[in-house]
Image (cartoon, rainbow, N blue to C red; front, side, top):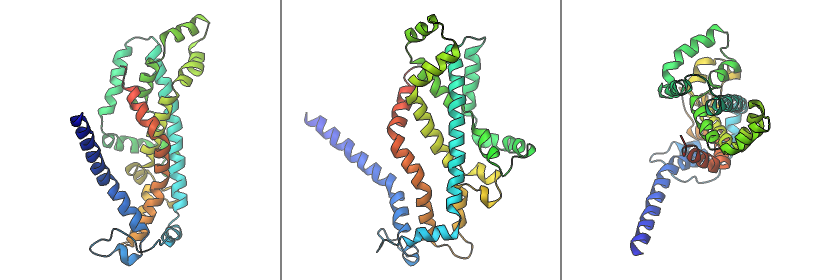
Length: 274
C-alpha cells in the first residue's frame, strides 16, 4: 500500500514539474503582454508585471489590422475543417464498407502519403496554385488541405467500430449506401468527427509557411504572418508583440479547452481497432 502511494506521489510530482515547464512560456507571454515597454526589455527578465497595462492590446489593434488577420485565419481554418470532415467521412466509408478491387493496397498507398513531409509537397503545390491564379486568394489557402490521409484513417477506425449487426439490419431493410452513410455511419461517429474537427482547426490555425508563400497583400494575411508585423527593424516593443501573441493564442486555446476531452478520447478510441 505504501509503495502504491509513493508511486502515485512520484507520478503527480513529475507531472507537476512537466506542467510547469510546459506552461512557463505561456506565463512569460502573458506577463510580458501586461508590462510596460521598459519592463519587457529589462535585463534580467522580469517574471511579474508591476501592473495590468491593458492598453498594450489597444496598441496592437492600432498598429496592425489584427482583427482582419484573425478573421482570415478563422475563415481559412473553418473552411479547411469542414472540407476535411466531408472528404474524410466519404473516403473512410468507402474503405470501411464498400467492396472494390485492391482496396487494401489502395488504402495502404493512401496511408503512405502520411510519411511524406509537407515540405516536399510545398513547391509542386505552389506551382499548381500559381498556374491556376489562386495566389493571394482564399482558394489558394484552403483547397490544398481539404483532404488528408490522417482524417480518412481516423474516421475509418470509427466506422469499423460500428456494430455490424446494425449495418446488416439497415441493409436488409433496403437502405442504400447513401442512406446508411447519412443516417447511421455519420451520426454514430460524432466523437470521431469532433476529434478530427478540433485537430484540423488547431493545426491549420497555426499554419505559417503556406500562407507566407501564397499571400502577398495585407488583406489576405493570416494571423500567424500578421503578428510578425509587430517587429520592426529599428525597434521592437516586446510588450506589444506579446500582447499580439496573446490575441493570436486566445481563439485556439478556447477551441482546445472546449474540445480537449473529445480530442484525447477520440484519438484513443480511434486507435483501438485496425
